Length: 482
Image (cartoon, rainbow, N blue to C red; front, top):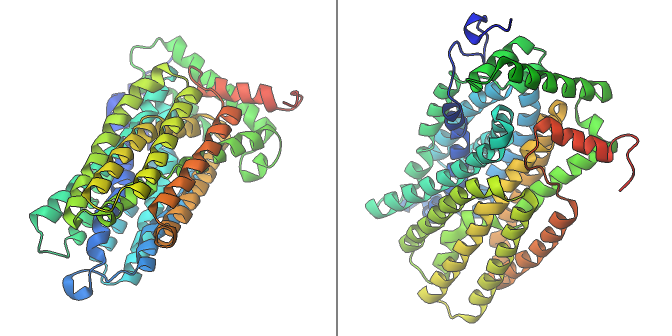
């Protein structure tokens, strides 16, 4: 007879009582809220940080502005790489507990920074947490979700990321307009992120570890208990079958390779890793974070006042959230490849129109608001299709024994691409202008669309183990070269 959850001894990551899956998702995706808030809040803080020290700022130069923005992304790259490995070794839940503490230290460090050098160090620390969360939260969600709801549940993380960005934009606008004379209010903007960090740390103490990680750690009894907790009402034989499927897939993986980067250097695993890297890196070359980080700067240079530009950016956050909500439903009915392609077509059109508008409309509020409209169109394609599909695919395509490593490596390179683009953007715009810069991004996205059509697999409606079997059959030993 199969024992129930209350009959089992309690271990870390195995709560004594059932946790509703919606509660587990809500707590875990606080990591996504922090990801979004800490990447979005800098857009409103930068205009104040450019002020002189006598005025309450840090006297940022154009180079300093690039460094302050990009150092978080450098930290995020290494946070994703290390976070993926730690996630496999110590558990997804354990990783999120540690990341919550790093989020808190980074938020307080940036808020209290007395000079640019200290700010850069604090931004790297904060980046470690952002990158670690970006590599851990989607895997955590994918591994606890039933296969029929997995796409929607993983897409919740994208919704929480853009909700965090919207929260940052609203906070920036409220602080900027409520205290127009307080030029050091950027410190309050940055420091508010400490609140969700504390909530994440408290909440994850009461959440379960994923059953698949327990199986990876040879804790099958704990895996069975958590499966029961996450699937109340499911017959015991269904849960036993799911656990056996996980065990069988893991045994095949271990027979083929023990796990780690060395094991993906050849064969079918290399193909999967290269596809994951391509999906991750090309998601950044859409130009999404140029708009998320520098929208107020672009609008201010177009002709709006500083506070008006910061306030107008709230529209970006609102549309991002609405698009992400739409994405939650679209991923349930539209294949991953088709939705990704539709999003890229929308993005190409929006970037082209931003380039044209910036070129033909004279500087002033009319140009700024026209550019803002096409930014919103861009975000419909990005946050409603490209971003959720990216995170869903990355959480799905890697086999269990290299899931943390594969996710961490892909997201590491995603953040490297993000850092290069973000650091370069202010310097490139100074040299070539907004129109030429966004025109180049439009061309890059045509290449991204071609990659999607040629290489991105369809994973909708399959369990994680079925997806792995599909890849193994297609590209594994003895498979026909395609």
